[in-house]
Length: 214
Image (cartoon, rainbow, N blue to C red; front, top):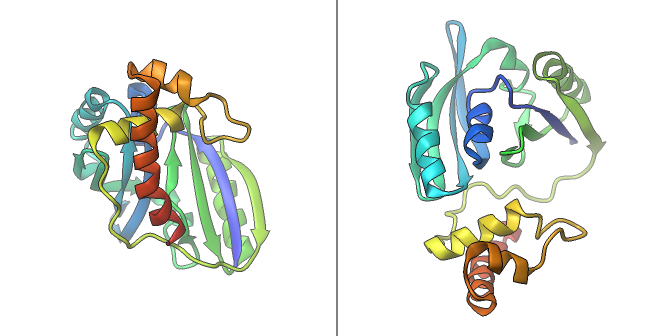
């Protein structure tokens, strides 16, 4: 299967533009879609990361949008139904397979990771996003898939565990090389080093087995 990673601007996107505005990031996965008149109706779900106040502001503004049919946020989980423009048929069609959640960053960009048995379908998608959303094809390669973990029930985190993992992601703790250490993250959180470390490790203990399928 061919796998492509495509980055594009959130400037004119329905959710991404507001995620940037409120400093919230999302990992979004399309559940299903259908064509209806001049729109594509898409059911989406995933994880939302950010301060609770900012999540509430994001939800409030999304619910005012005519393209949002339904949208709910519960802690760090969201599910919704939205309308996408018809040019997104290059994404929502029989040749394109979502193999990982899309990254909707608070830094002003989205990243799609999608697959297809037809390389030309991915090239067409990249060209569409380049034209419509200032997109960039980051990579495309042909490789064997080993798994896609999208159907398991995600483990529940406590508020403190969720906040710890959000801070770690936002400040580059999981990047290589790391952009920050646990001591600095603890200081940002307002907690002691030992307390913050416990919350972060407990969150990792729950999430890592979930994402690697153990």
